[in-house]
Image (tube, rainbow over all chains, first blue to last red; front, top):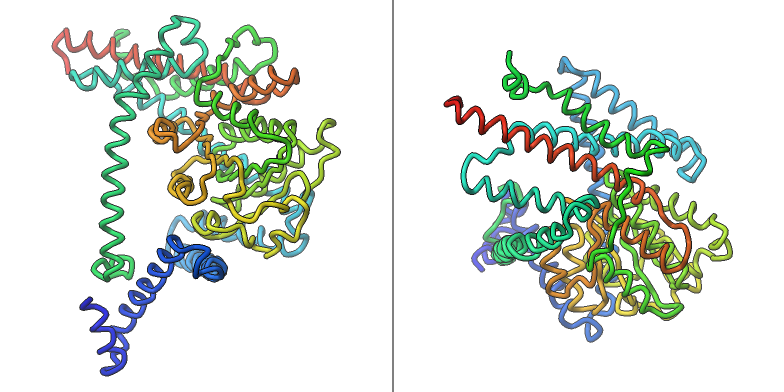
Length: 223
Length: 279
């Protein structure tokens, strides 16, 4: 609670602006987190309108976030265009952003507009292509590095072969026990490992939440 | 250079070519003999059974939380699932949770489906509704269905009759290529909805523990899950809803086999080299 005591002293008595920059967000965080939890546990009893408050507040926050992101993209690319040798990528990026904004403002974003055409015929295929390229890299990487160099890697290799074959239709046609073995690997050893990771992650999350709640963790305030 | 050396230093362009051919050849017309029958897994069948158990007019919420990046794996499942809901005459709420990019893709797909002969008489706002995109975390959206970005929820049509909060949703499906739906799983404790997921193949193992504990009533895994669902709907209703998942499954099979073969060759070369005393 030390942080809240300091907040009162700094803001009301000393009027220390630099400290206020850190401590006011912490206080806001505490209030928001408290209300959030109270709403969760006492919904329908005391906080009927709070969900609307949060909904609107977060929408406004989201819009401000998008504005900051847009500013950041323009700023970053401006410096790249000005000083970087590989400025052509940045020029292309900024031009495309401007073009899409122009098309959206000019004719709207409904189906059949130039914006929609660009989205479906350029953006979607590009995104899908980038993701699809992974298959080629994985094949090359698997060939070069997926080797049974030790007992552990041999177990991993055998397990992965069974799982891979169990996921394809031919695996079942080759031997009807392949899907059974593949399913067992996924349901038992793999799932047990995942569960341990999930538990560990959640424990860490709870700890972090408590630290942020009490103002002990300030990395999100760039401290 | 002997064959062992050649295999050891195999040009990556040859590997790329093999993968490319394994994907493209099964898709060429006339190569249908490369298709193998697919049987439904218990996880996918569970989603189908849940929808089958719903009555006409029950509310289904679809969280379309993927971008065009994951289109190949998840869009076929969405199409098959959405058609299944329409056949069953369920009220469908489609929310574009994770990304505004997914919204364009989803709306276009819905439009295409609604133009099909059997669904032409269905109306937006009565039988289905797009709930668009809210630029915030999923938690708040789950808390209440009070507002979309246009602020017009509950005013857009008959579909909202009897649906006040997510407690009134009978079944919820999330489609994702990320950990986005973790919050939906956590919030089940409050709203008691039945929740199932369709995820990309790489994410499947992450969600199996939730299926085992019953927090997920069903789980569709990647392209195969979509192909299984296409088959289940097509067989049950005697319709041809076999789509890109069924077509793509042979590509998936042969590309897996190529990778399996490459790994096998890589290991053979490694063991021969080790036996000879090389690195």
